[in-house]
Image (cartoon, rainbow, N blue to C red; front, side, top):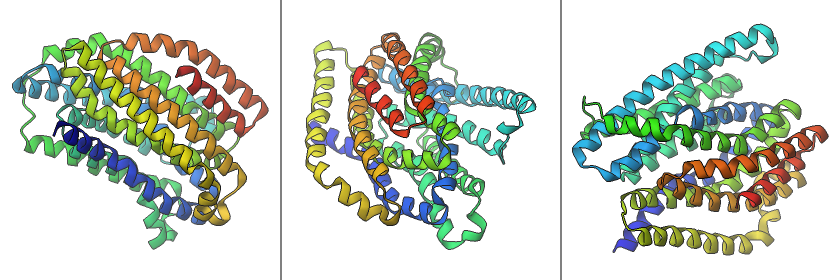
Length: 400
């Protein structure tokens, strides 16, 4: 029964990513047909920029989800209320500071100006709130709620604007208009989770000193670790956009976006085993949970990748049709391997976070970061899109 329940929770947590894969198969060809590689790249970079939320969120929700496993329900509600309040205040302050810094920078460099930049900062504010709410939902073991929110906030906000292109191309050919539609969808996801928490009476007016102490003790290390993830997972895309252009970013991101969906399974495992490990006081049981998730993912996904490898070329050509080319096919195979190792590493690093060993994560990533930056410098120097992919592959192997 326990196994079946855990398997069901893992499936529910992985469902948004699985659905996202199917949505991508339909929407990416639409974007490429009506926008082309250049405009689609500009649309993607706006979503990619929001990934900085991994740093600006300060991991309040993640810290709270771990703490919630160790207290009674009444204290849980105080932790939830304090975390949401803290997240709203900190998000408002950090977005205001970043906005003022941006205004200062554009005074010195007019090339940094882009249309509707205010929407981007507003989207960052809401993204901070969403990440906190999603982690709280996972901490409460509301896997269906967090999965629905994840599906709406990430997958539908990226995919649904493609339908607006089909039905009314004349008003949505502007990339900023498409991103504005994405923002409305993201706000809906936030309201969906927030009002569900209110309905289930998880909010009160009490301030929890317990969680504030945990914020002060662990936020800096978790945020530092998240900063490394931001550099490792997204900095290559920023550099490609700046030095190789938006079209190259599309060429690079499409195979990475699909191959990266392997993470839906590892994320599903993580969302289920975080509460179990955090609430466990038995070291042996804790490592048994880690080993079952680690080896289960390693053997199951590894075998699956071996099976599909001979058919990848034909599948990509059938999917993208006239937009398919050798670069996308080659990059897709590299990113599949990268995603496999990154997912395994993510399982291990998340386990270390639950054991309050985030500092250990940071020490390992600091060493890898030096080599990674060297690889990116070489990639920029030669302006070779494959070098960026090789750098990502080498980084994932070293980290593993």
